[in-house]
Length: 190
Image: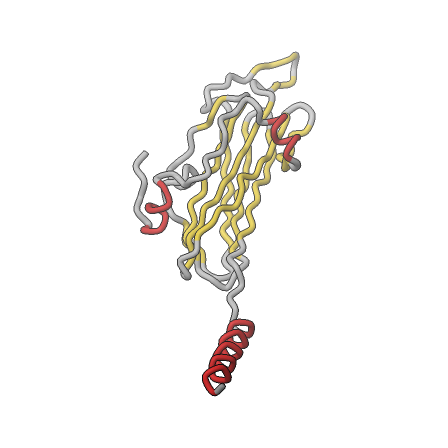
């Protein structure tokens, strides 16, 4: 009887401790916004760590202009780490000049017209935190049509995503270089 009482006290103490001292999960917010102008594409990438944990992230930002992939640096290609402390926010703006993408500018009468019609964006963020937990945010999808809706807006809903991104390669569930590279912080060659 004494053993059963001791076991009950130990279990009660353990579960009481766990319920009071539980860790909140890692929570990251991601966003891409921007505008597709006739001469350039402006984008802003935001990644926010909404948890009490420190995380190391790798982000794969894929951009297609008229279904042609745009080459991005190692940071946006998932080959370099971005460390974020608790409640840190990372934000970076950048743009693409359409001529550097190999898209000629055209003119219609007096006004210049874009040499491209649409921009597709997909973002996946993988993370590894200080409690050795790992996860993925995304993939998330955005789209802009230069002539009709130049603001970069999110694509929501599985059927809509499937329709808009049906001719693109599927998103990779594993970070570039694999989970081991993310856990160790090893750089991934291009």
